[in-house]
Length: 355
Ligand SMILES: [Zn+2]
Image (cartoon, rainbow, N blue to C red; front, top):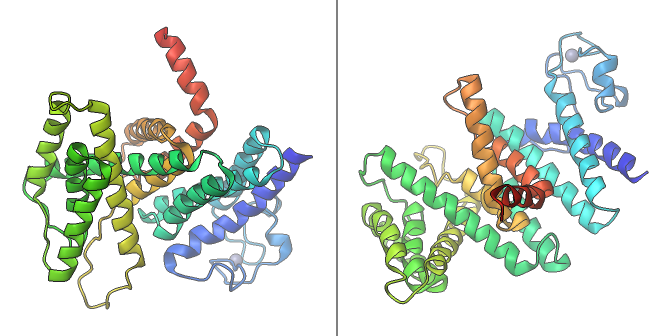
């Protein structure tokens, strides 16, 4: 009964996610008005909205104007139904299972919105992050809270730094424009000082420059050309200075992740600027926030999710010969696989290595 219930719930949630994917990027309400055919505008009745079945019964066409309906709709419904069914095989009926359903639903919405718009809405990435942290705090699920928090910061910090190095190479080592009051510059600085002095001090110093930038209206930051090349040097030298390489790396990633997620939240909550003002691309970092959110649910297995996502994205990018591909869907896919099968995959890999 439970798997059947999960499947039907997933189909219904998938139907709702179609609405979210369609309307959220447009800033429309997701509860009102009721669903309409995008071609003829006719309001759809209950018989038109049965997940998957309506689409099949109507032969993929609108009942009223007979124009084709995108197969995306039944696909999202079937996918969500399938994922909920999968989750029901791992988790018995419980609050934990509901949390996993929410995790999966948010990832489906994020993946398809990114496919459509090349954006990952902050409401959903931070929703996923905070739901993971709250679940860890209240239920100790899927991870104890300290591990969930560390996972989020480490994952976001790592991808934030990868983005930093990527940007520096792409700009051929020209300095990028520093954002006021907070941007990637603070993230890179936090990493540098986090490696040297521990995550707490690294974060504190970066928050200090954030505050100073906000106060003065000018970017008070160390240049990327200084912080990013020095970071690996500090990491490699840390054993010589009586430290420990892994500890220094952890300090760097935790501090960078803290700044990346806090900075992203600042830009997400900042009131929208007037339309005339030229909108700075505030941090970007959509994938960084998504991986941070996955870290709260997966801990260190988020890195396996990242690896799987890069692999799947590169493979499909080659197959489809597409130049610009959104990374969110692959990251979401990698995250789901790592969530259910991470431990199994890791054990198989270790066995393969003979460890
Ligand atoms: Zn129609």
